[in-house]
Image (tube, rainbow, N blue to C red; front, side, top):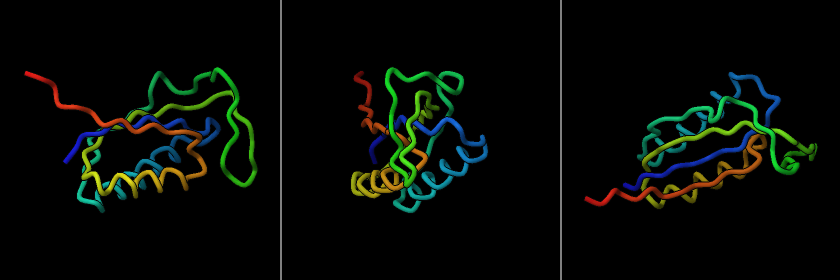
Length: 107
């Protein structure tokens, strides 16, 4: 099982409970593929100004100048990663995401 880090850029005008609900959905998908969500946190204190505006992928195509970053660590089999990325693509409240495979430290 590989260790991964994912950074989510979320829509800034959501309630705090909505961020938890989205992460519970992500955790459920990870666990359904025999993985484990180790931790997640709102990164850098909440809303951050973006370098450029980003258009949402939802039906309304609203442009955002701010976003909320969520940093998450999880373990998952490589086969489950494709399904997780598909789920992240479908979530309208996620503006962008980046998944990075974390290597084991040498030594």
